[in-house]
Amino acid sequence: MRQINRHNFFSTGCVIFTLLVAGKILLEAVAQGIFTDYQGNLLVMLALSFLATFVLSQYYRFQNLPLLAVILGQYVLLVGVVMLFTWISSHFEPLHEDGYRDMFLSFTIPYAIGAAAYYLSLFGELRRMNKELEEIRRYQNDLQKNNNNE
Image (cartoon, rainbow, N blue to C red; front, top):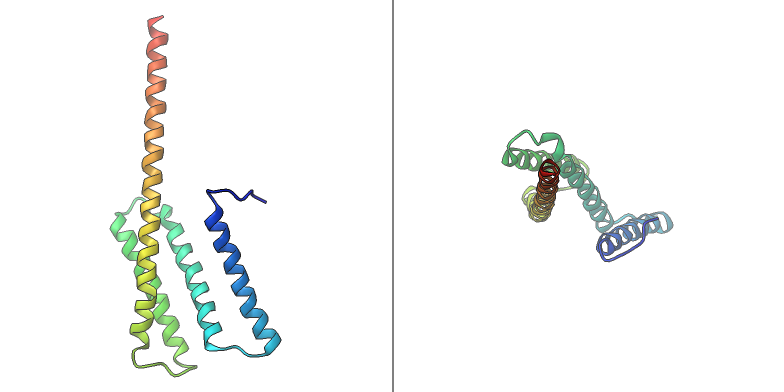
C-alpha cells in the first residue's frame, strides 16, 4: 500500500469517499430491500464518472490526431452514451419532458470542467518533462564539449 502524503492526500480521500458511498448504497439496498431513485442516481453518476475517466485516459492512443478533434470526439462519444442510457431508461420509468436536456446539462457541465482540468494538468506535466529533457540534452552537450576539449 502506498503511503499517504501531500501529493496523493486528496485523491486518496476521494477514492475512500467513493468506496464508502457506493458501499453504503449497496448495503442499504440489500439490508432494507429498498432501492430509491436517489441511490440509482448516485450509482449512475459513479458509472458515468468511471466511463468519462476511462475515455479521457485513452488520449494517448490518439496523439497523432488534432487535439480539438480528440476532445470533441471524446465528448460526443460520452454524450451519446448518456443520451442512449437516458433513452433506454425511459422505457422503464417515465421521463420528464426536459429529461434529455437535464441529463445533457448534468453531464456536460461537470465533464467540461473535469476534462479542462485533466488536459491542463496533462499539458503542464508534458511541458515540465520537455524542460527536463532539454536540460538533460544541454548537460550532455556540455559534457561532450568538455570531453572534446580535453
